[in-house]
Image 1 (cartoon, rainbow, N blue to C red):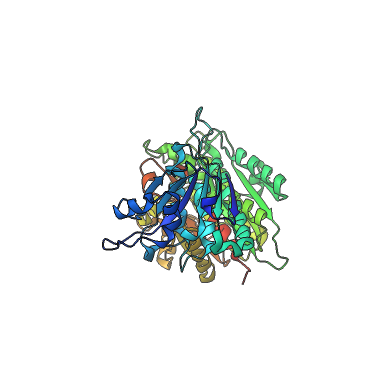
Image 2 (cartoon, rainbow, N blue to C red; image 1 turned 90 degrees about the horizontal axis):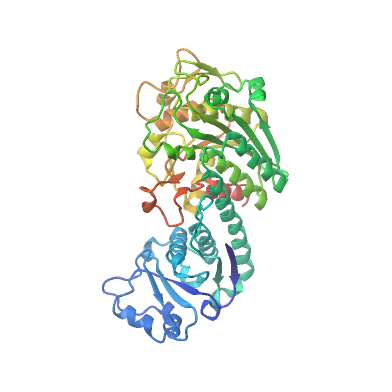
Length: 508
């Protein structure tokens, strides 16, 4: 999708539809909003008439379309809900609702009147970024395997008008930055949505190599022979039952600042998770192609980091394997040795994500000595039970890192909730046979015992674990409850959040 900033008023441009935001009115409020005066003039009084008849209430997602008597662009009013609850994510959702709502109505070009989406706590730059996000992400559909598709909005302009024309240069820069991130989210979703017969560990390695070639990133791929030499027993064990061997993929961005921090971002890349010998129920197993979402998000984060030239050096580590039952699959009761020498007692082959991450985390810490580590993983069903389908759970050993990620989440609308990690959880993952065990006798606090397991492989390095099991993808059931900028399937959760964190790291 093409997005541009235009200093003119939206009602003067040639677009299929011009969009204005409207706040929710109270039952007793009959006064006509001053912000709709130009729309009313363009429709020869139709907007005011609809307002007076209470056909326009401004409720969230309410879409009202007017055809101008002069047969120029349609005028669209999108409800923003209560002013007291208004923020950037309101704008993001509104833009996506418009794009989706007009998809089947022949609208190919849209103009958003930016002043109508600005409020006291949502300045013009925040609103412009959110409009960009919402429009690009709201238009997304995974259509690779469809033989026919319906059209969608192809061009969006953000109209400044007289009120904001003076800020044109700064707003153009902000929108260009946001386009880059949103395009990366679309790119990431396309990979994450690929089925397991296509998106094998080696295919993810190919995607990384292509990205490295495009953006000048150093990419190293460790195959099964090299993993054996490195004693990466976690990846080899989990991937042992598949004809598609595991891969450890490392992508390096050198950083936009010579004195910047080094951040390692590690992702779980289970390209399909049957549960292995501890096999999952058949119901919804098709969704397990999304178990690679953490690793694919890491690819997206590296793409955004290099494109935007973020200050810190960023090391991306993708831990990729396919977890299947088979004659060479690992078994409950096995003991495997991870990179660096720590041993893992396997009690459940369906707790495989933490086993592959053990290799990736230990490798990142020992080889690169990063200032901090962030991992992203669709790790536990317990996270979904605790926080639902829209919020990721975070466990962090460093308050500054945690607060930075929470601030980024507030900006991007990708919600995080910080969870505790105590000695109780650490005790539960201690093994009598090895150093740690990948499952516990007590079936409670599953998200936190998984985090306690991972902590054993990062040492004293400041670390944040993002369990994205809930928001990594949507199903037919959960899709209708999600914001309209989330699509059916992979959401690329974490790409905008961590990219924003990296952009802000090292800045005043």
